[in-house]
Length: 322
Ligand code: UDP
Image (cartoon, rainbow, N blue to C red):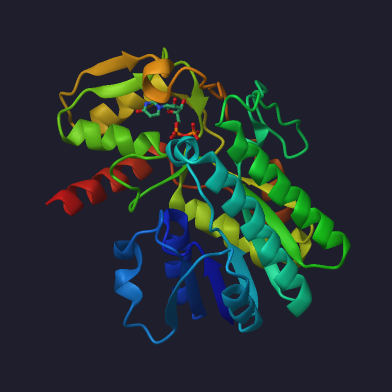
Protein backbone atom coordinates (compact mmCIF):
# COMPACT_ATOMS: atom_id res chain seq x y z
CA UNK A 1 0.00 0.00 0.00
CA UNK A 2 1.18 3.57 -0.63
CA UNK A 3 0.82 5.52 2.58
CA UNK A 4 1.17 9.25 3.25
CA UNK A 5 2.40 10.28 6.70
CA UNK A 6 2.09 14.02 7.40
CA UNK A 7 4.52 15.00 10.12
CA UNK A 8 6.49 11.84 9.34
CA UNK A 9 9.82 13.33 10.43
CA UNK A 10 8.49 14.07 13.90
CA UNK A 11 8.90 11.98 17.00
CA UNK A 12 5.85 9.69 16.71
CA UNK A 13 5.66 10.07 12.91
CA UNK A 14 9.18 8.78 12.29
CA UNK A 15 8.58 5.67 14.41
CA UNK A 16 5.33 5.08 12.54
CA UNK A 17 7.21 5.39 9.23
CA UNK A 18 9.78 2.79 10.33
CA UNK A 19 7.03 0.35 11.23
CA UNK A 20 5.12 0.92 7.97
CA UNK A 21 8.30 0.35 5.94
CA UNK A 22 9.05 -2.80 7.96
CA UNK A 23 5.58 -4.06 7.04
CA UNK A 24 6.37 -3.61 3.34
CA UNK A 25 4.45 -0.42 2.56
CA UNK A 26 5.57 2.46 0.38
CA UNK A 27 5.76 5.57 2.52
CA UNK A 28 5.65 9.23 1.53
CA UNK A 29 6.53 11.66 4.30
CA UNK A 30 5.37 15.27 4.28
CA UNK A 31 7.14 17.46 6.81
CA UNK A 32 8.12 21.13 7.06
CA UNK A 33 10.81 20.38 9.69
CA UNK A 34 9.48 23.04 12.03
CA UNK A 35 9.40 20.36 14.72
CA UNK A 36 10.41 17.32 12.71
CA UNK A 37 14.07 16.40 12.62
CA UNK A 38 16.17 15.22 9.66
CA UNK A 39 18.01 12.78 11.90
CA UNK A 40 14.73 10.95 12.61
CA UNK A 41 14.38 9.81 9.01
CA UNK A 42 17.96 9.95 7.66
CA UNK A 43 18.29 6.14 7.85
CA UNK A 44 15.39 5.77 5.37
CA UNK A 45 16.60 8.16 2.67
CA UNK A 46 18.26 5.40 0.62
CA UNK A 47 15.23 3.09 0.88
CA UNK A 48 13.43 2.96 -2.51
CA UNK A 49 10.08 2.54 -0.70
CA UNK A 50 10.58 5.86 1.08
CA UNK A 51 10.04 9.36 -0.25
CA UNK A 52 10.46 12.65 1.59
CA UNK A 53 8.55 15.77 0.60
CA UNK A 54 9.41 19.02 2.32
CA UNK A 55 6.39 21.22 2.57
CA UNK A 56 3.55 22.72 4.49
CA UNK A 57 0.41 20.77 5.35
CA UNK A 58 -1.66 23.88 4.57
CA UNK A 59 -0.29 24.09 0.98
CA UNK A 60 -3.40 23.11 -1.00
CA UNK A 61 -1.81 22.20 -4.35
CA UNK A 62 1.00 20.19 -2.77
CA UNK A 63 -1.42 18.37 -0.50
CA UNK A 64 -3.75 17.62 -3.37
CA UNK A 65 -1.04 15.82 -5.32
CA UNK A 66 0.08 13.86 -2.25
CA UNK A 67 -3.42 12.77 -1.22
CA UNK A 68 -4.33 11.84 -4.80
CA UNK A 69 -1.27 9.58 -5.07
CA UNK A 70 -1.73 7.59 -1.87
CA UNK A 71 -4.20 5.06 -0.54
CA UNK A 72 -4.11 5.80 3.19
CA UNK A 73 -3.20 8.94 5.13
CA UNK A 74 -1.80 9.20 8.64
CA UNK A 75 -2.29 12.86 9.53
CA UNK A 76 0.15 13.67 12.32
CA UNK A 77 1.45 17.07 11.20
CA UNK A 78 0.65 19.65 13.88
CA UNK A 79 2.11 22.20 16.22
CA UNK A 80 2.51 20.06 19.37
CA UNK A 81 3.79 20.58 22.88
CA UNK A 82 3.12 23.26 25.47
CA UNK A 83 6.40 25.06 24.72
CA UNK A 84 5.65 25.53 21.01
CA UNK A 85 1.97 26.31 21.61
CA UNK A 86 2.81 29.11 24.04
CA UNK A 87 5.44 30.44 21.62
CA UNK A 88 2.97 30.88 18.77
CA UNK A 89 -0.72 30.29 19.51
CA UNK A 90 -1.86 31.71 16.16
CA UNK A 91 0.32 29.34 14.17
CA UNK A 92 -0.86 26.47 16.37
CA UNK A 93 -4.48 27.21 15.51
CA UNK A 94 -3.81 27.75 11.81
CA UNK A 95 -1.72 24.63 11.25
CA UNK A 96 -3.82 22.35 13.41
CA UNK A 97 -7.21 23.45 12.17
CA UNK A 98 -6.61 24.52 8.55
CA UNK A 99 -4.13 21.70 7.87
CA UNK A 100 -6.56 19.07 9.12
CA UNK A 101 -9.51 20.58 7.25
CA UNK A 102 -7.46 20.47 4.04
CA UNK A 103 -6.42 16.84 4.56
CA UNK A 104 -9.99 15.78 5.34
CA UNK A 105 -11.49 17.66 2.39
CA UNK A 106 -8.97 16.16 -0.04
CA UNK A 107 -9.39 12.67 1.41
CA UNK A 108 -13.13 13.07 0.94
CA UNK A 109 -12.69 14.24 -2.66
CA UNK A 110 -10.34 11.36 -3.57
CA UNK A 111 -12.04 8.76 -1.32
CA UNK A 112 -8.98 7.98 0.78
CA UNK A 113 -9.00 6.61 4.32
CA UNK A 114 -7.54 8.91 7.01
CA UNK A 115 -6.24 8.58 10.55
CA UNK A 116 -6.31 11.86 12.49
CA UNK A 117 -3.88 12.18 15.39
CA UNK A 118 -5.42 13.99 18.33
CA UNK A 119 -4.35 14.31 21.92
CA UNK A 120 -5.28 13.64 25.53
CA UNK A 121 -5.12 17.42 25.79
CA UNK A 122 -8.74 17.44 24.50
CA UNK A 123 -9.78 16.42 28.04
CA UNK A 124 -8.35 19.75 29.20
CA UNK A 125 -8.24 20.15 32.96
CA UNK A 126 -10.79 17.44 33.69
CA UNK A 127 -10.09 15.93 37.11
CA UNK A 128 -11.63 12.55 36.30
CA UNK A 129 -9.43 9.69 37.32
CA UNK A 130 -9.88 7.51 34.20
CA UNK A 131 -10.66 9.49 31.10
CA UNK A 132 -13.13 7.86 28.73
CA UNK A 133 -13.57 8.95 25.12
CA UNK A 134 -17.08 10.21 25.93
CA UNK A 135 -15.96 12.39 28.86
CA UNK A 136 -16.23 16.19 28.81
CA UNK A 137 -13.30 18.39 27.90
CA UNK A 138 -12.83 21.17 30.48
CA UNK A 139 -10.99 24.18 29.11
CA UNK A 140 -9.67 27.36 30.65
CA UNK A 141 -10.11 30.89 29.28
CA UNK A 142 -8.48 32.22 26.07
CA UNK A 143 -6.11 34.29 28.24
CA UNK A 144 -4.38 30.99 29.05
CA UNK A 145 -2.98 30.27 25.57
CA UNK A 146 -2.30 26.65 26.42
CA UNK A 147 -5.95 25.78 25.71
CA UNK A 148 -5.78 26.79 22.05
CA UNK A 149 -4.05 23.48 21.38
CA UNK A 150 -6.79 21.48 23.09
CA UNK A 151 -9.47 23.41 21.24
CA UNK A 152 -7.71 23.03 17.88
CA UNK A 153 -7.53 19.27 18.39
CA UNK A 154 -11.17 19.12 19.55
CA UNK A 155 -12.17 20.93 16.41
CA UNK A 156 -10.10 18.46 14.35
CA UNK A 157 -12.07 15.64 15.95
CA UNK A 158 -15.38 17.37 15.23
CA UNK A 159 -14.34 17.84 11.61
CA UNK A 160 -13.31 14.19 11.32
CA UNK A 161 -16.69 13.01 12.59
CA UNK A 162 -18.55 15.55 10.43
CA UNK A 163 -16.73 14.28 7.33
CA UNK A 164 -17.47 10.72 8.41
CA UNK A 165 -21.17 11.60 8.21
CA UNK A 166 -20.53 12.50 4.59
CA UNK A 167 -18.97 9.10 3.97
CA UNK A 168 -15.28 9.72 4.67
CA UNK A 169 -13.41 6.73 6.09
CA UNK A 170 -11.75 8.28 9.11
CA UNK A 171 -10.69 7.36 12.64
CA UNK A 172 -9.15 9.43 15.44
CA UNK A 173 -6.56 8.58 18.08
CA UNK A 174 -5.90 10.54 21.27
CA UNK A 175 -2.28 10.14 22.32
CA UNK A 176 -1.32 10.14 25.98
CA UNK A 177 2.24 11.48 26.49
CA UNK A 178 4.24 9.31 24.10
CA UNK A 179 7.96 8.96 24.86
CA UNK A 180 10.96 7.03 23.61
CA UNK A 181 14.09 7.40 21.46
CA UNK A 182 14.14 10.50 19.18
CA UNK A 183 12.47 12.78 21.71
CA UNK A 184 13.93 16.24 21.32
CA UNK A 185 16.65 16.26 24.01
CA UNK A 186 15.94 19.94 24.64
CA UNK A 187 12.73 18.64 26.20
CA UNK A 188 10.40 21.00 24.40
CA UNK A 189 7.00 19.41 24.90
CA UNK A 190 8.17 16.39 26.84
CA UNK A 191 8.89 16.20 30.53
CA UNK A 192 10.61 12.84 30.08
CA UNK A 193 13.08 14.29 27.58
CA UNK A 194 13.77 17.20 29.91
CA UNK A 195 14.27 15.03 32.97
CA UNK A 196 16.57 12.59 31.14
CA UNK A 197 18.71 15.39 29.70
CA UNK A 198 18.93 17.06 33.10
CA UNK A 199 19.75 13.77 34.85
CA UNK A 200 22.48 12.83 32.36
CA UNK A 201 24.05 16.30 32.46
CA UNK A 202 24.03 16.39 36.27
CA UNK A 203 21.79 19.45 36.23
CA UNK A 204 18.85 19.95 38.62
CA UNK A 205 15.73 17.99 37.64
CA UNK A 206 13.02 20.67 37.45
CA UNK A 207 9.65 19.56 38.82
CA UNK A 208 7.01 22.21 38.12
CA UNK A 209 4.58 23.04 40.93
CA UNK A 210 4.65 20.51 43.77
CA UNK A 211 4.96 17.53 41.41
CA UNK A 212 1.64 15.99 42.49
CA UNK A 213 0.14 16.45 39.00
CA UNK A 214 -0.08 13.14 37.17
CA UNK A 215 0.34 11.82 33.64
CA UNK A 216 0.42 8.40 32.01
CA UNK A 217 3.32 7.82 29.68
CA UNK A 218 3.13 5.62 26.60
CA UNK A 219 6.18 4.07 25.00
CA UNK A 220 6.25 5.10 21.35
CA UNK A 221 6.25 1.54 19.96
CA UNK A 222 2.89 1.05 21.70
CA UNK A 223 1.64 4.39 20.37
CA UNK A 224 2.53 3.24 16.84
CA UNK A 225 0.76 -0.13 17.21
CA UNK A 226 -2.44 1.55 18.39
CA UNK A 227 -2.23 4.07 15.56
CA UNK A 228 -1.92 1.43 12.84
CA UNK A 229 -4.80 -0.63 14.24
CA UNK A 230 -7.06 2.45 14.39
CA UNK A 231 -6.06 3.46 10.86
CA UNK A 232 -6.69 0.09 9.24
CA UNK A 233 -9.34 -1.99 11.04
CA UNK A 234 -12.83 -1.63 9.57
CA UNK A 235 -14.44 -1.50 13.00
CA UNK A 236 -12.42 1.64 13.84
CA UNK A 237 -14.15 3.81 11.25
CA UNK A 238 -15.92 6.87 12.59
CA UNK A 239 -14.53 6.27 16.08
CA UNK A 240 -12.20 7.98 18.55
CA UNK A 241 -9.73 6.00 20.67
CA UNK A 242 -7.55 6.74 23.68
CA UNK A 243 -4.10 5.40 22.82
CA UNK A 244 -2.25 5.31 26.08
CA UNK A 245 -0.83 3.35 28.94
CA UNK A 246 -3.16 2.92 31.92
CA UNK A 247 -0.47 3.52 34.55
CA UNK A 248 -0.76 6.91 36.22
CA UNK A 249 2.31 8.45 37.87
CA UNK A 250 2.95 11.78 39.57
CA UNK A 251 5.59 14.03 38.07
CA UNK A 252 7.60 13.93 41.31
CA UNK A 253 7.64 10.11 41.19
CA UNK A 254 8.66 10.31 37.55
CA UNK A 255 11.58 12.60 38.47
CA UNK A 256 12.73 10.09 41.10
CA UNK A 257 12.40 7.18 38.66
CA UNK A 258 14.38 8.94 35.91
CA UNK A 259 17.06 9.91 38.42
CA UNK A 260 17.36 6.30 39.57
CA UNK A 261 17.34 4.79 36.06
CA UNK A 262 19.95 7.29 34.84
CA UNK A 263 22.06 6.67 37.97
CA UNK A 264 22.17 10.44 38.34
CA UNK A 265 23.25 12.56 41.28
CA UNK A 266 21.17 15.56 40.08
CA UNK A 267 19.10 17.22 42.78
CA UNK A 268 15.32 17.36 42.26
CA UNK A 269 14.14 20.98 42.53
CA UNK A 270 10.67 22.54 42.52
CA UNK A 271 9.97 25.38 40.09
CA UNK A 272 6.78 27.51 40.29
CA UNK A 273 4.60 27.28 37.18
CA UNK A 274 4.72 31.06 36.76
CA UNK A 275 8.51 30.87 36.46
CA UNK A 276 8.35 28.01 33.97
CA UNK A 277 5.50 29.15 31.73
CA UNK A 278 4.58 32.75 32.66
CA UNK A 279 1.79 34.21 34.81
CA UNK A 280 -1.38 33.04 32.99
CA UNK A 281 -0.44 29.38 32.70
CA UNK A 282 -2.97 26.72 33.66
CA UNK A 283 -1.99 23.14 34.38
CA UNK A 284 -3.78 19.91 33.58
CA UNK A 285 -3.65 18.22 37.00
CA UNK A 286 -4.50 14.68 35.96
CA UNK A 287 -4.31 12.72 32.77
CA UNK A 288 -4.86 8.98 32.74
CA UNK A 289 -6.77 7.07 30.07
CA UNK A 290 -9.52 4.52 30.34
CA UNK A 291 -8.17 2.19 27.66
CA UNK A 292 -11.11 -0.22 27.49
CA UNK A 293 -12.52 1.05 24.19
CA UNK A 294 -9.25 0.51 22.31
CA UNK A 295 -8.89 -2.91 23.98
CA UNK A 296 -12.41 -3.97 23.06
CA UNK A 297 -12.59 -2.64 19.50
CA UNK A 298 -8.97 -2.63 18.33
CA UNK A 299 -7.55 -5.38 20.53
CA UNK A 300 -4.93 -2.82 21.57
CA UNK A 301 -3.22 -2.63 24.94
CA UNK A 302 0.03 -0.79 25.66
CA UNK A 303 2.65 -3.35 26.64
CA UNK A 304 5.92 -1.64 27.51
CA UNK A 305 6.21 -0.86 31.23
CA UNK A 306 7.45 2.63 32.14
CA UNK A 307 10.64 1.31 33.75
CA UNK A 308 11.61 -0.60 30.60
CA UNK A 309 10.66 2.25 28.26
CA UNK A 310 12.70 4.69 30.34
CA UNK A 311 15.72 2.39 30.23
CA UNK A 312 15.51 2.19 26.42
CA UNK A 313 15.05 5.94 26.14
CA UNK A 314 17.92 6.73 28.49
CA UNK A 315 20.15 4.36 26.50
CA UNK A 316 19.29 6.24 23.31
CA UNK A 317 20.02 9.61 24.94
CA UNK A 318 23.41 8.29 26.09
CA UNK A 319 24.32 6.84 22.67
CA UNK A 320 23.33 10.09 21.03
CA UNK A 321 25.51 12.09 23.37
CA UNK A 322 28.39 9.65 22.97
N1 UDP B 1 6.93 19.31 33.81
C1 UDP B 1 7.80 19.44 34.89
N2 UDP B 1 9.07 19.83 34.64
C2 UDP B 1 9.54 20.11 33.37
C3 UDP B 1 8.66 19.97 32.28
C4 UDP B 1 7.35 19.56 32.54
O1 UDP B 1 7.42 19.19 36.04
O2 UDP B 1 10.72 20.45 33.26
C5 UDP B 1 5.55 18.84 34.07
C6 UDP B 1 4.46 19.70 33.45
O3 UDP B 1 4.12 20.78 34.28
C7 UDP B 1 3.31 18.69 33.34
C8 UDP B 1 4.04 17.37 33.07
O4 UDP B 1 5.39 17.57 33.48
O5 UDP B 1 2.64 18.57 34.56
C9 UDP B 1 4.01 16.93 31.61
O6 UDP B 1 4.49 17.99 30.83
P1 UDP B 1 4.73 17.85 29.27
O7 UDP B 1 5.12 19.19 28.77
O8 UDP B 1 5.62 16.69 29.02
O9 UDP B 1 3.31 17.41 28.67
P2 UDP B 1 1.78 17.84 28.90
O10 UDP B 1 1.68 18.87 29.98
O11 UDP B 1 1.36 18.36 27.56
O12 UDP B 1 1.12 16.57 29.29
